[in-house]
Length: 343
Image 1 (cartoon, helix red, strand yellow):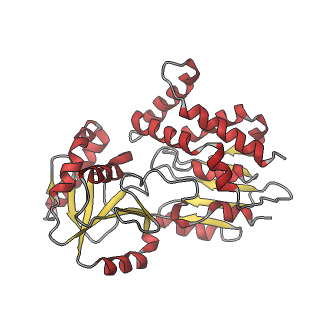
Image 2 (cartoon, helix red, strand yellow; image 1 turned 60 degrees about the horizontal axis):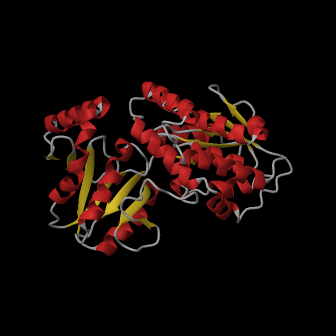
């Protein structure tokens, strides 16, 4: 049995490795080769975005925060359980938190990666096992249906989630589905805050469940302020996949006679839906903050995170949507608490 202290130490070493990425250091040749292969497999995985994901994990995987995260839990398992993991792949390393949670809790991970991201998590696990060889027997990757497992954590589309809930109904399970990030503007945002909001919108091409896909703005708000903040990201059109999606979605909207605001690489569309396509941000006007808060409470199951300039519990500052802490759980479902009760 690997003690919790050993597991924390191994992940801290992995974090140190990621905090010091250097293209001039031969130690990182395999990392950059993996990035190139990941991009060839998935055109959305640009080098900058993958490096950003690695760097983000480098900041999270440190001894202090790992201890703080795990402190409330005992993990007194008589024997490790095998946890089947069905991972998403919409943005680089999006499923790594689940693998981390299973291993840090002393359990074994049976991992089914998304075909969109089959390389990056495998790379991190290989490095982790170099730092702590005892973890080699704690991770198994598979492309097949799970056949030996004690519990399941699965993430997918709304349709996939319904299938998961049925298929895995006889074992303990934690199932996640589609959610989106939203922002609340009150008209008093600074230029810097709007620029930070723009990053929340376009980071990872807006494909993350925490990406801001909709903004609520007060009546009479000047939407050109959002366009102004987005303008520095016009280089998004250098990505063929992004440009093709922009052209396609714009054509569909125009043929459907929807009213659009367009700046040549990004669109704003008034729409009640929380889910917006690539290269488009939905917006909705509101008149009263309290009424809006009630609406968001009712729609809580559709929302992954909320950003605003308000110091409200549960709200993130602009620019922090893609920077969750270890304890900011997807869909608000506490993965460690779920794992802790397995006996």
